[in-house]
Image (cartoon, rainbow, N blue to C red; front, side, top):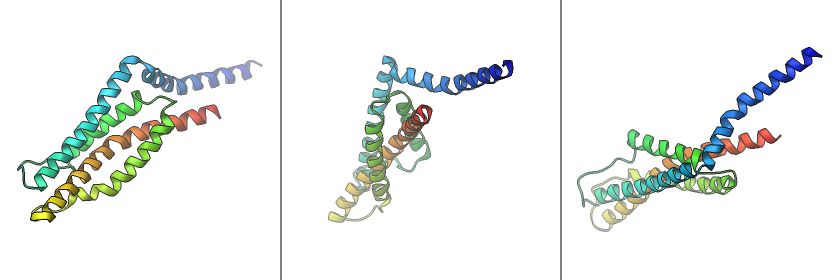
Length: 167
């Protein structure tokens, strides 16, 4: 009997070790401060994506000389980091499925629109205006995708872990 009890005790210890990080993340996601931080980071990420798109579109139109490259590793990394934090602290279990559906739609759209950010500059007239809009939309969607995809990965892992834990 003592042998069986020790196996049971070790099983409980393993379960505690596995579930403790998930419980910490769940409690963090439920806290008011984390929700506030997550909400602000979501707004910052979205605004940064739109501003980056505007700057790239204006550069493509020849209105400004500076440009923020939508493929810049540091900028994409920053957007991904914000997305990870948002995924951890801003989406609870009740919102997870709706968030994932929206994230799938956004990342698919971002993936199909991002090549527009790479259109060439130097066209004239209507082609230049069309190119500027394409660059704006493409770069904005690329940044939104870089922001949303990591959040979707975190939320997706939470959902899968929760489902496996209940099984």
